[in-house]
Amino acid sequence: MAWRDRPLPACAILLVLAPLLAGCRIEVPVSPDAPASDSMMTTAPEPSGDASGGLSELPPLPRADIVGNDMTFDRGSYIEEADTVAFSDGLSRAPGWSQEKVLVNGESVYVSDAGCTASLRSTPPQGPLVVSGNDRASTEALFRFLDPSILPEYLVTTDWLWGASPAESTASIEFLTYVQDAAGDHPASAISLRLFEATGTGLAFIISCPSDEQLTAASVEVRSSISVVPPG
Image 1 (cartoon, rainbow, N blue to C red):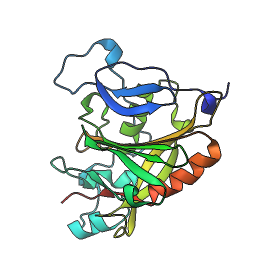
Image 2 (image 1 turned 180 degrees about the horizontal axis):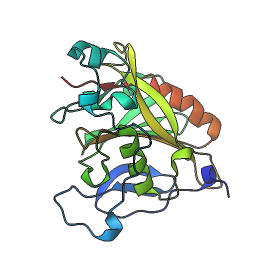
Image 3 (image 1 turned 90 degrees about the vertical axis):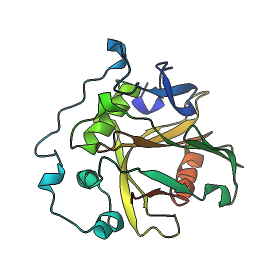
Image 4 (image 1 turned 60 degrees about the horizontal axis):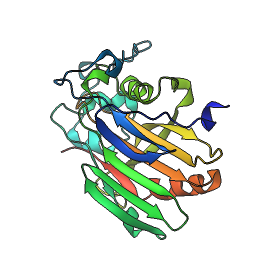
């Protein structure tokens, strides 16, 4: 069975990250100050090359340039520890989509007339998974926690809108995305994550559809209808 045809395993740790995806619930590790067994912990990957991305190594920029330009992974350290990164969505106003849940424990859920489901969620602190100075490696560690068989080479970089609202966004922000083709009773699905090293929190955007073709179309609709709101 190809890796894209595997449903994610049923996970049961403590804090729910997203609703049903390919027949299971995806959950995230406990916060750093809570006790955790060995099974809850993940060793974060070492950054390759000079990928620390520490703020001291980045050229200083005015705040307007930080929030107005593309937030690539290597610019993640421009986000400060006290910042909050959230999402702004207009998906409920997109043709064929309706809102099923709005910001319940940080999650909003939408359904489409085509039978697709979209979950937009912010995560609680993910201290055990954070790789200092490296948003990409931190995000890879979160994927590996969800399923150890999800290797970095299975992830693709996707661009989402970076701005106060979808209509006002003029820049993009990078996420890592894992796609599963529809197989048997399991729907096609795509999970996009970014774990922000500076804040220790993340965002998760999950789309699930009956077929691969519907997933492709729904992904375009969702990505054009929500934005990640820059801090400050």
